[in-house]
Length: 428
Image (cartoon, rainbow, N blue to C red; front, top):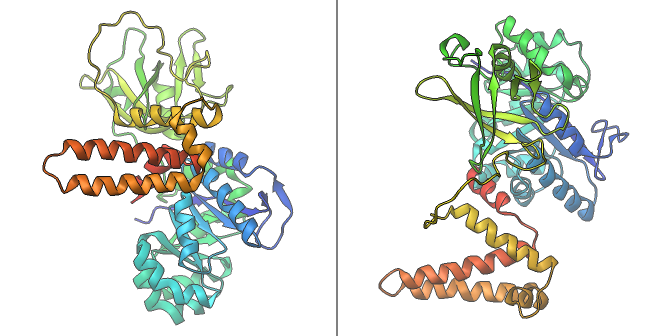
């Protein structure tokens, strides 16, 4: 069954979000504020159109796109300013999950095969106004593109008749009940544009309406009913909350049936306050929301582990985690968490850049500049190759460590974080 999606758009121009592709009236000076609102509203994906003009403005738009992708809790689809394969590469490297080729441009049509073979069919969409473009390029699209974005909502029926794979429909304005009629078309996989932007607060209610009308939408589904959990003497189930990326334990709280149901329904962690005897949505007053990534019950069905995306601090004191009062500790050889080690070394390198220390080799590299850093990185890469030709692995281990250090100096110089690197690796 084709799952239907609600997909807001950000029309990016001069660093601001504007009304649409033809109207550059500023609707929000800070597009990241819109991203936060869409995160909180149960949006399924986000499309960002780069409307910038000129190379300098385009590079600034790409930087803003990186910020949007880093903040967004859903996949970001990039569009606009695609003239060649390199432009698609920049969008994907900025963090976009997919890129949209504008089929009003002959150059995009001509480059489809090359771009698709380079990055994969699943990462390419095509946008169009006139369905006759589909007829003329049907074989090309079916082979090299994973979906479509119809920019003219009056052409849904014609598109449906021509091609068999999913397409989004961009709509500027529509009565909310009319969305169900759009979703009734089998191949329509989502609605995007200002019809969603202007009604983002209603997405959750619209999804409920869709489900009542047997229309499949993106929602969390609970595998276990509340009755299947073993409750404590107060009728509650304890919940341990963990950062889904770092696996750091953040806090502990309780759920009752209402908070459990609301968490599943909204995708935001909701608990039961024993002191106030009421539900509370984590972050409702502080803005430090917790977005559900995974809920798991333990073997006895009496405790829930919640893996979440944590906005800001989890603890009311402002600490990242509630667990910071060390009671006792036995000396032992602690096994290092690889990513934690990378981050700790990288933090020291970045600190040296901001707070130089006399005699520091790291500051020597920063002072000499990018050419020196690249020269050392190249030398260390060569050392790895030489070491690998010798028997045994010890020498290779040392050379790789030297290379990684110099690589992190380069990362700090170019303002690239480990999170950006791991996100890119995870997408590949």
